[in-house]
Image (cartoon, rainbow over all chains, first blue to last red; front, side):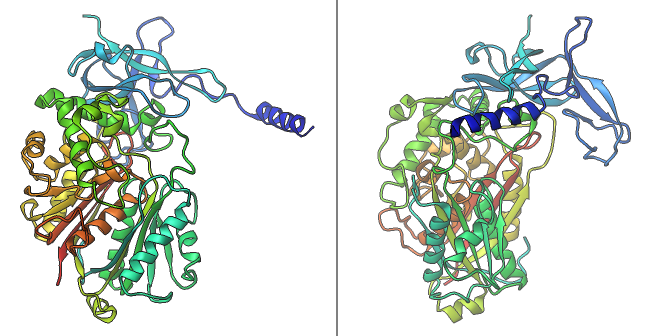
Length: 151
Length: 389
């Protein structure tokens, strides 16, 4: 009896809840509809010119509040990487991660496609998209990742 | 910080570290009581302000610690959180109160129980909702990236990193407060489960429970309390992680380098004069990087410093004489305060079985804290302690 009640309550709550996101954030990257490759979105402060990724709520350099979107280069240099076997609850491991330095002098943390043994520091990598985690509804969340660049 | 008047440590306390079935408040109270009794305080009503560092045990943690001690009431208790820096930052706040004259005597406690609350088999991540956290970053991964880059640049090997664990566990052999201790070989360290390549389980600090406490006071108060061996706080520094979104050197650590430069400047003590250091050895690689960041050796020579025995008993500067986080484990809110407690006991010559000889006259502590995208760490807290008797 008690169990049924709990079930009902839970069901009710789920119904009211908005579905969780499946695309990490449109302000971060663009997957063009025409099939051209995805790119990260940098934001340049219109007042002082500072370029940031990800977008900040205000420019930390001058407190400017207007930004111009700048598509960031799709290829970068893998500064460092690691293979992680144990991590946050709800994520899939092992996971290959890395810091990628983009030509615009921006460093991005991302998951890497492929096993760590396939990478070395200073490798050229390129942007791709893929699943980074599961959302609260158990559906995959798509975001940016990097993979070894085709030479 | 600029110390307007001299501040002294009158008493310290630390629990044993490891898995405890007692919650954070019990552990914190145990350390606080030890520290107050050590400072010859035998009843409530003496301490004037209190700071309690804790990260994951919920709200009003400080009041939970002090209620049973009869100290809640006119005692302002302020709870301090900055991830792994919380305990060290609580001490910084207490020092500030005495230095500025807000109080003549203050207590700082760092306490944490992870075992009762944390989900097993998970690693610590950075700020909740941060973009790097959302993409899967955990601290084991961040330090593994630093390790891989360090090995790439310097030619250091996984064996070199493992040697840090071997040293620190050996230091802890006779330390009753430490959790993991005694002989372990490089091979055993490397053969333990891989957590984040190249860091194996034995190169990552254990997720443990414990508490440390420090009573600080003015010179007059040390006399009033009859403190025989007051330790002077010759420097206390807190930095927040500077934001930068560009490429930078992760084999260094900007926030530690800034904090070190500041504390050396403020205390007038250079790295060559420091006898012992407890630093943020949460992972084997961290200790090697911090030798360099703290100026104990030149950049790129951390492994040599370790191999030459300069960071162990008999060396230039004994690093992690208590066994460090690699032996205590790292209850995040507790470690910073416990490091200071252990250093004070070393300076008083009270560490039978793991006493550094000659008895250290200068000790330094260092804890970083947390992480956010665009920073190496969200916080860094350092203290410089000198013998004052």
